[in-house]
Image (tube, rainbow, N blue to C red; front, side, top):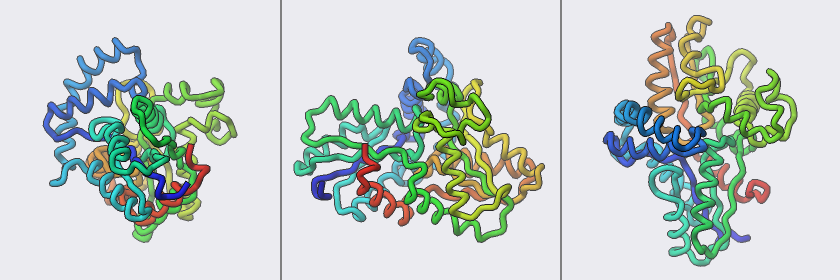
Length: 344
């Protein structure tokens, strides 16, 4: 199919409309009530989230958002729009955006394409999540597909598969990180958004592989197609090889834990406090699970993470920006879009 018959929808997480507590509450309610994020029975989830978590968390989250908010609005929204513009210029085909939570809704994106570009025969959904997880990639795709099915659109909808090990994504990521390796540093930590261990077990299509043995992520299995932990480890190892990082100079961890359940380990916050005691005084941190800088990178890592690390004796802390609108990433996206094997 020629480019002139295609359009692209970039799908990202979303953001509150403002830093006001009421808007953050609305956003958190939508986000945390997603059954793929907190996978408890509906009534229990409703009581837990709307009765306990959101009322106590919203004011703190609102304050955190205020620390990173820009004159143009939410960094994630602003960066996604900049990426949309850059990709449209690079490809010469229509590109619009949609969010899993908040605005714009996928329906708005599909309606806009149908209205403004009636010649389009295929819309390519590009989730801005490199790794498969039920609470990120899966929920975004399902949400968009449900909106598509409810409309009578003249185009078909395809999607970009998870690209955690795709060469062009890794090359772009390596190019964005490489300049930071020229400085004096002791260690680079790759911090990924965490998920509960039960999500990994639930997503195991074999029912007997994930988290069963210590080396499960390195033993071939059909489970790896939907195993977030395996995919994060694969990204880390492939990226380390591309960057020529020596063993012991890098590691991975998982951030953003919520609640008391067991989440994927090691925990990023714990590692920040431990590393100075291990002789790591100058730390670089990259966040490959995030394509666009957002609350979890700009506040949780760059601000809170730096504080934890330095309070424990660390000297230098550098958060490497996400891919955002890096030219190598825009070109990689164009290449991936044109690869038929990447579209499902």
